[in-house]
Amino acid sequence: MSEENNCKVISFINMKGGVGKTTLTINIAYTLVKEFHKRVLVIDMDPQFNATQALMTKFRSIDFYQKLLKTGPTIANLLIDSNNSMVKNNNEEPTIKNSVQHLFSNEDEKFDLIPGDLSL
Image 1 (cartoon, one colour):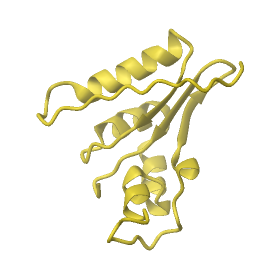
Image 2 (tube, rainbow, N blue to C red; image 1 turned 45 degrees about the horizontal axis):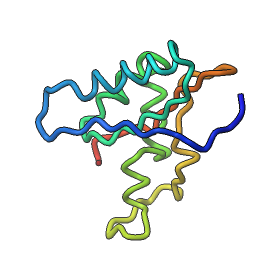
Image 3 (cartoon, rainbow, N blue to C red; image 1 turned 120 degrees about the vertical axis):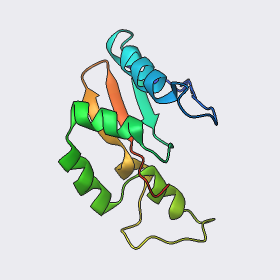
């Protein structure tokens, strides 16, 4: 499959809780990957990190996520260690590339996640 420079961004945003943001996000992302053979990156910016929990339990394990938290490649660490942040993290300097967790991939499909965590 050739690389294309025309990616699409879909955001699910609502200040009210319980409106289905997480459910829509993970189900639409999964459908885009499995049914439409797209490459999808979910960025979990919800402080409750429910999308991360759901996707990690389906494709990895909670133990994998616990180990991941110790090394720090989550969305919170990417934001905390930005040049504009007043808060500094003691973990290794995170990058977007090492924060992406590969959940599923084959020749035409790719499903990735930048995990969230409670410290967001």
